Image 1 (cartoon, one colour):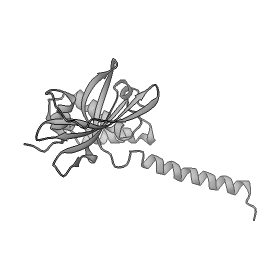
Image 2 (cartoon, one colour):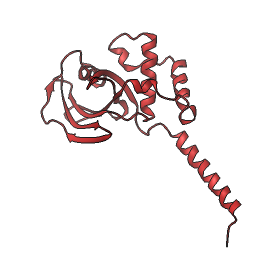
Image 3 (cartoon, rainbow, N blue to C red):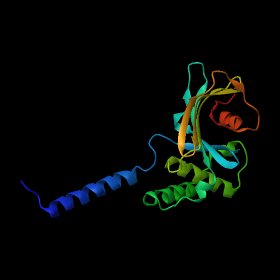
Length: 189
């Protein structure tokens, strides 16, 4: 049975609408909840670093494992808030109305502007629209205040290079990104 061009066009239009609805309703990356913990400079470029709070794992020996990612700070300012059917704006307004307090505020006082920028950075990270410059899979020994990277992924000229981290733990220096990360994911002492 031969279908008319009009029937095919209607089917394709409906199909594309369904796919668009699925993509826009599930634009947030599934299963992640990125939280800001630190910033640093990488090859002269300021980076913002976040950890996946929903993916923190506790090992049998009570260490903590977590993925982190760092991306160029300037890219947050370049985000089109209308992307994903306005879901970024909706998420941002919802957090603002709920007076969301970023976890990093447990480590230091944030101004209202810093809270808003941190919240926006976390939301944008959850939508996975900024490609990270660096990703680390860390293991933290909370009792000994030590850290090691189990996996490292770095972007270089548009390509990602991956490598194994270190088998050896190193002491976490105070007032560093790893110190902030440990303070946020380790159980209170």
